[in-house]
Image 1 (cartoon, rainbow, N blue to C red):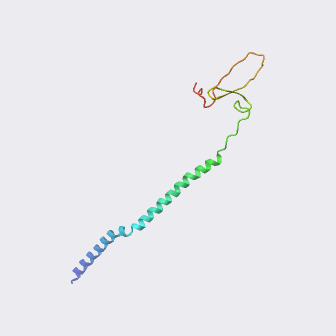
Image 2: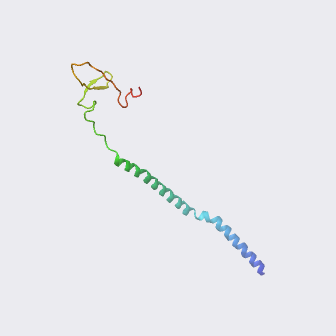
Image 3: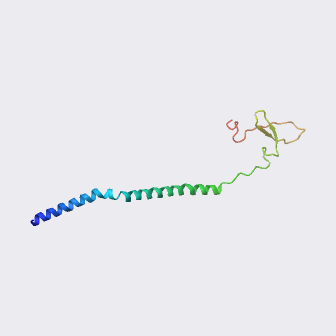
Length: 116
């Protein structure tokens, strides 16, 4: 074999090896790539859970139960009338009992009269 033939066969051998490495590389490394993808997926889920749980927990720290209103017309101390449809109407008397009666009606928050 001449030197040129050796060089050509060596180059061809290198080229063949590179082709085989390129072809076999991804197939041999599928387990490694899949492992990395699984780790990325798990890490993403953990980060997402942290990003959701922390704000919910922080908001929960600052939310308080409403205290019952004292002296409000709908409290147990006020006067009420049970309507025929099951609703309760609360009212309050004030002023001179011997004076001229005045009736004042208003809709509370969330009542059907809210938009009037």
